[in-house]
Amino acid sequence: MSNVNILLPKGTALFYGSIKDDLGNPLTGFDVSGEDQDTYQYDSDGVSDANGNYAVVALAGNWFANLSNDDPRLTNYVYSGNIGTTTLTNGQAVRQDFLIKLATNHIAGFLKDNNNTPISGVRVFANANINGTNYQAGNAITDGSGNYSLNVINGNWNVSVNCCGDCDDGLSSNYQCPNNQNVNISGGNGVANFIVQLCTGVEITTTDLPNGEVGVYYNASLNAASCNNSFTWSLNSGSLPPGLLLNSGGQIFGPPNSSGTFNF
Image (cartoon, rainbow, N blue to C red; front, side, top):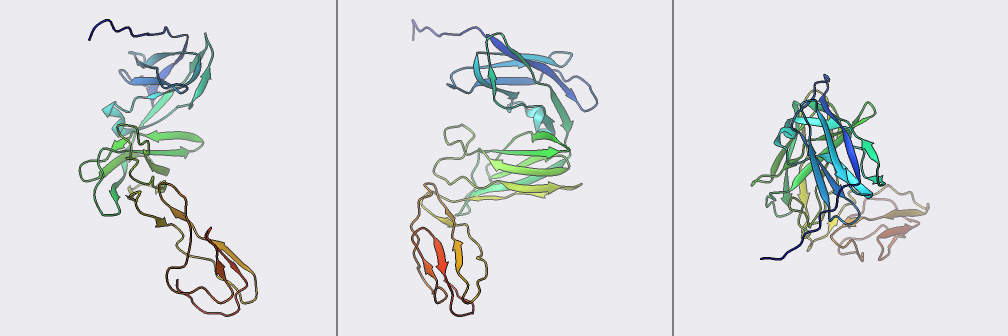
C-alpha cells in the first residue's frame, strides 16, 4: 500500500497530574491513556516520569483519561482519582491526580453461559466508594475456564462485566448483559459468579411475589430479561388465585377472593 495520508491533529488541550502511592511515593512508568468521547477517532497517552508526573494531550470536546488497563502492574492495586468524561476547550489544562493502593484481598468468580460453558477473554471491573473516595480495581480478564480474580481492599465493591459487544475484551452481543453484583470485603475475600443467558432464551428475574389479602385489590408486576427486552406474558401452567388476572404486560391484578398457595 502506498500514497496513504494519515491526519494527526496537534493537541490543543491536556490532562496532567501525578501518580503516587498512599505513602506519597511517586510511581514511574505508569501509562495514562486519553480517548475522544465524541467521535472515538482519536486517542493519546502519556507515561509518568521519575517524579510521578504525567501529561496527556487532547482536543477540544469530551475526553476521558485514565490509567491504562494494559499495564499488568495495576492487577495488584486499586486506584482513585479518575474524574470521568470531561468537556475540554482549546488551551485548557485539567489536573487529575491518581492515588494507588496495594490490594491484598480478592474478589474471584467465573463467567459462564446458561449451558455451563465458560466464556473467556472478557474484562471484569470493580469499583467502590470508600470513605467518600471512588476507587477502581485493576481489571481482570476471564481465562480459558471463564475464571477471573480481582485484587481489592476493604469496602463494598460493585462488580460488573464489560458488555461492549464491539470491544476486544467485551461480552459478545450473542449474550444478555448480566446484572452487576455487590461484594462486601472486610478483611477477607469475596465471590461474584456471573451466568449469562444466550439471546435465544429469556430469564424470568422475578423470584417471588408479595402476599395478597382476600378482598383487597392486588397489583404486582413480573419482570424478565433477554437481549431485546420485549415480552408478551401468558400463563403456561398452574392457575392464578381466583379473582386475579394476568395481562400481556406481565401485570397481575385484581381482588383475590380466596386464600391459599397457588403455583403457576
